[in-house]
Structure formats: C-alpha cells, structure tokens
Length: 227
Image (cartoon, rainbow, N blue to C red; front, top):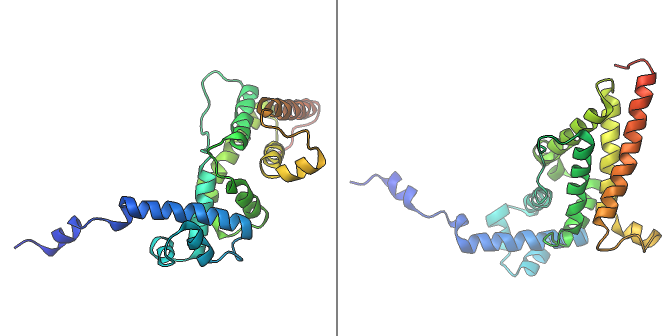
C-alpha cells in the first residue's frame, strides 16, 4: 500500500504555478502604485485588488494581509538595485568611489524601474515602518559597509570611525537627494534635471566628494590621530 505521505509530496504547489505567480505579480505592481499614491495606512485592500484586477481573497492567499504585501513591495523595490559587494581588481579607492556613485545614479535613469518605486521609497525612508527594519541587515547595511570601505581607503588608516561614517553618509545623501527628490529640484532649478545628465551628475558628486575627502585626509595628517 502506498504511504499517504507520498501522495502529499506529489501534489503540486499551487502558489508556484504560473497563474498564481501572475496574480502575485499583479498584486505587487498594483500595491506599489497604491501605496505610493496613498501611503500604507490610507491604502485599502480593495483599492489594490481593483487595480490588480483580482479577487480580494487573493491578498489573503498570497500575503495574509495588507501589511505583509507592503513589506514584500518594499523588499522588491529595494532589491531592484543589487548591492555591489566587490570591485574589479586594480581599481583605486577614488575610482571605486566614482563606480559606486555611478551605480547609484544609474538607478535614477533605468527605464525598467516602475514609476512608483522612487515615491514609495521616499515615503518609507521619511517615515520608516517595520518593512524597512526587516530588510536593514540584508539589503541596506551591506551597501553602507561597501561605501564605508571605499571612504576608509581614501581617508587612510588615520581616519576615525566617525569620520568614515559621516563622510559615507554625506556621499550617500547627495545621491539620495537626486534619486528621491526630483520634484524639489524641478521646482528650484527646472533646467538642472534632464534625461541625459547622468554622467554630468556622477562627475559632479564624485568631484565634490573627493575634494572633501582629500581635505579631510590632509587635516588628519596635520593633527594628532583620534581614536
């Protein structure tokens, strides 16, 4: 007699079939749009399922509730830009810095990114939820560690941990401003933002950042080392 357990193993995983995956994709896309438009708390399940063109029960089937869907959407939005955990051999710290800035700025011009992504992440960064905390160690800290390693290579061994972290945050802050605050820039300086200024923007942020880092290193050589 065939054991019952073998019959269970042979049953298909319904959540992994093509139709179920397509429904999940629709919910993620619609959820990203609605959350970006209305925010986590104002968004409703019905608004999301109506936009996705699926039954309300699909939320419970795939995500249990609105908050689990939101967490999945935030993870998806952040994972669209993979973290560069290594650099090509032979690149100087200054070259690695430019490479990393170009990597971040390229995200702004990538046509494959959904329109809602920047707005959603800007909201989440401004008012963090448990969704951000859930991906901090997996998706955010590795990138922070990567740029801090580059900065330390430029500042030299005499740099304090505080100097390294503050400098890395300042560089990231420049990139974040251009990535997530387009509307502010457009209102202040409408001629500054256009489709083909990626290289110009990368060069500016790199030059500005390197000038500050080299000044910091010079200052450290002239002063007693801090611990």
